[in-house]
Structure formats: structure tokens, C-alpha cells
Image (cartoon, rainbow, N blue to C red; front, top):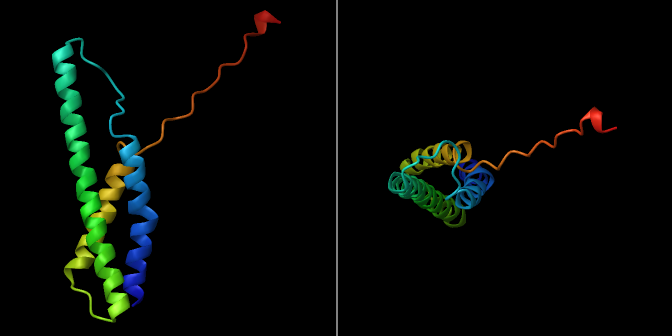
Amino acid sequence: MVLELVMVAGVLALAVPALVLGVRGLTRRTGHYSSDVTADRVSLVLLVTVRLLALLLLTLLSLVVLVSAVGAVVRDLDMPGLVSVFFVLDLLCAALVLLTFGRRDPWRVRRRATPAGR
């Protein structure tokens, strides 16, 4: 019963915020851009497609773990061993999303006024 509650807490604490931040950063691009408009468009489509696949994987793994863990707690049943593997994969996928495109934009540093203007 403790393992199921830890899994539910882990999914709610890490995977759900990663999913929300990942959806917000889905189309955000940082880095260098190509001068060729067609290549730039193709790279954006590829980038968004890969990010969507990662978010879909994260969503499916989170749903499987949550349904299995909550069902095991409510019905007082044994949870299949593969759900533990899915839980670890879910945490790894959430870490991937958070460390790549789920990050918030860094704060812009305000420049101090030049002392010559005083």
C-alpha cells in the first residue's frame, strides 16, 4: 500500500507539472535559426513533433501508473510488477521534459544605468 501511495505522489509531484510546463514550452525555440525559410520551417515541424511524442508518452505513462496505483489501493489488490517499471520510465520522461523544453524562460537582467548620465 505504501508503494502505491508513493507512486501516486511521485506522478502528481513530478509528472503532472512537467506535463503542464512541457505544453507551455511546446513551440518555444531557443538557439540558432537558419537563414533558409524552408529549412527553418521543417526544423520547427520536426521539433514540435518530437516534443508532442514525448508529451504523449508522458501522459500515457502517467495515466497507466495513476489508474493502476489508485485501483490497487481502492480494491486492495496486488499491483503488477510492470507498473513499477512504468513509474520509473514516467519519472525519467518527466525529467527529460523538465530539463529540455519544460524550463521557464530565464529572467531578463536589467542593465544598470551608466554612471555618465548622473
